[in-house]
Length: 65
Image 1 (tube, rainbow, N blue to C red):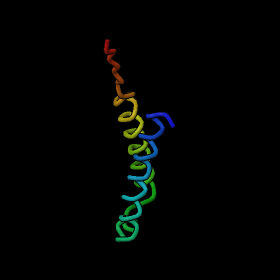
Image 2: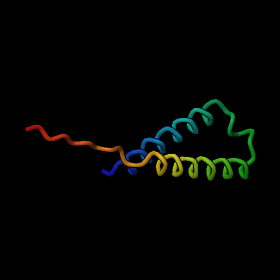
Image 3: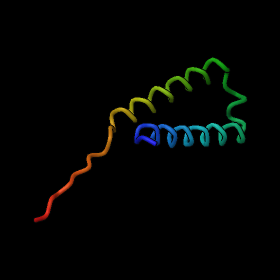
């Protein structure tokens, strides 16, 4: 699995956990659906931006003689 995909999977698991916690506590029942949708779009966009900006970690190799 590529680094970018692994990052997005981890971010998705984090978001699902946060939404699940808000749902169990009853917070999501007090928020209109439109605002939940707007928040979801923002969270997905933020995750993609963070994944792309972090990039692939640099792997350096040294040769020994």
